[in-house]
Image 1 (cartoon, rainbow, N blue to C red):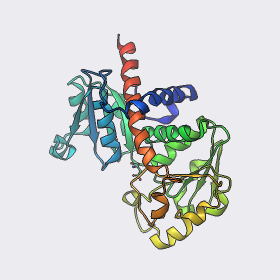
Image 2 (tube, rainbow, N blue to C red):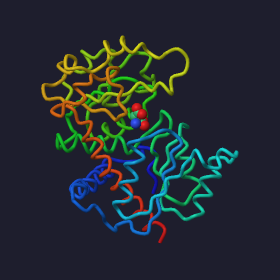
Image 3 (cartoon, protein in one colour):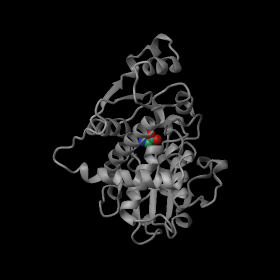
Image 4 (tube, rainbow, N blue to C red):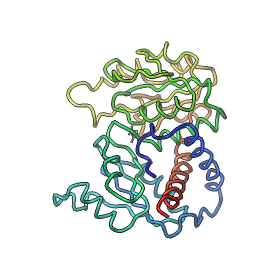
Length: 307
Ligand code: ASP
């Protein structure tokens, strides 16, 4: 009844979420986008870290399903008066919410919260750890293009070390049967990444060979401590994706990026905007459908559980 870690999901469950989300793709194209599936349900957005896409995407998703969504302005909350995060969560829990959507810089915090509240908890990013709905929306974007996951080769490139998007995608996409090439500078690749279906590369030319998807990541400056932030120009030269480097991948390879992008650092601006190669806008569109599916499934599951 929670969505906090991707490893909790098996292949069947992931496929079920993707199938449910598919229904909402067309729904989201309608002129009137309102359903009563979650009417009377209460969803809280609790974002303790910056967000544009994820927060608004959950808000749009909840409202289109008829739920009441409350955005807690964390900056104005009692956390500033010294209240602990868990106290804030149990306070909100006492208002009988159905779902708490949590983003926080601390790894594992969503899991801890989920063990202390009755509501369903969705992890919307916990530090460098996980971002499950991002990986699910990426999977939906890939499925729409390729119809399958088996035998696909997907490159995930850049700051893997600090990326919750990378961690969640590696888990979900490998569970679905894709092969993954992780590419980046040695300093930005974690030591514990060895996994079935995952290969590590330290240069784009070798790593991009035969890839169907090239997923670029932002350098997480806010999480880099000390003097390890790479020089941006140097970084772009070696690891930034432009048309020239994309040429190393499959002829029809598509480009993805979870956003926010740093144009000219990890991705060439023209390529990012090239809708014949870039799925970046499509990812955002799929994000709403995935979050609608996750809200619906979690709340339905909880209903059958509680009664
Ligand atoms: N928006 C994504 C995240 O919250 C990726 C990023 O910030 O670079 O993890």
